[in-house]
Length: 609
Ligand SMILES: Cc1cc2nc3c(=O)[nH]c(=O)nc-3n(C[C@H](O)[C@H](O)[C@H](O)COP(=O)(O)OP(=O)(O)OC[C@H]3O[C@@H](n4cnc5c(N)ncnc54)[C@H](O)[C@@H]3O)c2cc1C
Ligand SMILES: *[C@@H]1O[C@H](CO)[C@@H](O)[C@H](O)[C@H]1NC(C)=O
Ligand SMILES: *[C@@H]1O[C@H](CO)[C@@H](O)[C@H](O)[C@H]1NC(C)=O
Ligand SMILES: *[C@@H]1O[C@H](CO)[C@@H](O)[C@H](O)[C@H]1NC(C)=O
Ligand SMILES: *[C@@H]1O[C@H](CO)[C@@H](O)[C@H](O)[C@H]1NC(C)=O
Ligand SMILES: *[C@@H]1O[C@H](CO)[C@@H](O)[C@H](O)[C@H]1NC(C)=O
Image 1 (spheres, rainbow, N blue to C red):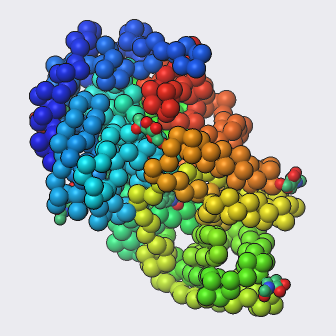
Image 2 (cartoon, rainbow, N blue to C red):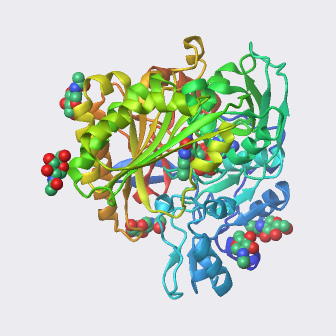
């Protein structure tokens, strides 16, 4: 299907919309034009009484001509493609901004239908968003080929960049033509930051190089072992590689094995089972190779472009540069123990009892993080699933001693539960065995809040009431108990742009509110209101000293500047104004995007005048 579509579009459909654009500098590759050059390619719009200057989209007179696209395609080695939604093969007609395409293919439809929930399958597709809500869900797999399939918020065109030159050319072309640019690695972003209506995508997932070194001779005081990963590398591949050396090594990654570790993860921070010991992934960064908005390849570390380096460490995804590769510290892997705990309807259907058990469990959050544990858990309507409690470097006896008060209290309450304990020769073995794969293709809004230690200690009853509010609103909670200030020495904290409040927390919560893929705009607005002003508001009120995590958040988080970055925000704004003054990059709720809005129901990206 893909080849036919691309040929048709390359030949005819782009032509239908191509209007010759003058002054496109496709030769600027390698010698970029100054970023602040006003090129006048803006589209004026008025929306709900406000005037906007908008980027160029298909159908606009400033959208590049077919010839410009072809020249660009040559510059990027033929890696430019017209995008179709993954499930287009299930429909007779796919209606895109570039025309109608007959995309039906029974075998491919069967393939996508079976694999739609498979994370790795979606990651390997060039533009898919794993959490489908922000694709607008306008083309889901179906058995009804006469249904409607439109592009929704999936991007219009993409390049599968294979070289730094392709990334540079993509940035230059988007900048010079004032196109909406989206950077996409694995598509994990909960907030829709790796998709975008009307956008050109630079897909960085082909950058799969991994190299290890025993010593670091670059900038900074550190001189130990390192790992350097290309922009496309996923956690599991880096961990596998580190495990293969003798003795095995490890790095900070998320709990999720499929997340990319050089794309969005470090730019948001990147928390995982090792965060209690070593901080965020961003705290372990030594150097990034990046392409900035002016198209220049640059190095960022403690000495060179140190303000950029700081901003890339937790200052917000896709805001300052496109990361090409990242170098991180690595650590000795350690024997580790894990404990699972579950209370589900087979144990009790008494919700009063269940909430008493949840209250007891959560009351130990400070005790857990103070003792160096990491805990991943879920609360759904009728159950508590703690899967797992992790003790890195801890024996069975050591971990059991730490969690004993919890089990004593549960036993005294008289609630039944399942539990099991297992010790592994390395954390890596524990990780493979106890952490579970997640599914793609779910339509839901996500939000969240992180509970401050002082609030957990002083306002715990209110925190549990907030949890009840979330469940009563139809939501789900995913908790991650860690404190990014527990193991990392205080003198290291300010080297990352992460909200300083994360150095004194006990539980980073994700809230999830499922929304049907076919919900109307009014239903979506109502759900958004519930997430922002009922569910998350309850957490914010109960833990006023908490913070929000930019990678697992509500895109409409109120006061996002303070919630995501606290006292670091002014310096991040300054860095954004320096490195991307004209908004070549855009991701929702990131530094310096205050004037930007997706008007016309989340579509056209524009700057408020
Ligand atoms: C199932 C699941 C589990 C998760 N678990 C964790 C966890 O344990 N810990 C945690 O911290 N987070 C977790 N996350 C959130 C995750 O950190 C973010 O979604 C992260 O941004 C993903 O980065 P990515 O590059 O893999 O994904 P993408 O969706 O491809 O990109 C995410 C963002 O980064 C930008 N980006 C990607 N590549 C680049 C690049 N090379 N240069 C510049 N910008 C780039 C994109 O434009 C986008 O804004 C999880 C998410 C999911 C869906
Ligand atoms: C880009 O070039 C390649 C290789 O020639 C071709 O297969 C592809 O269809 C072109 N893309 C577009 C959008 O025309
Ligand atoms: C299913 O689709 C994927 C990705 O497009 C492809 O790599 C794979 O070969 C397909 N499998 C089958 C059985 O067609
Ligand atoms: C997005 O979905 C809504 C329905 O929830 C629909 O009204 C709107 O037209 C869709 N927009 C696009 C661009 O797909
Ligand atoms: C449910 O549990 C609560 C708290 O333990 C208890 O007081 C109550 O009697 C239980 N209800 C039933 C129907 O068993
Ligand atoms: C405790 O939580 C309640 C309810 O959310 C809130 O009103 C109150 O301000 C909180 N107290 C403190 C000291 O933060």
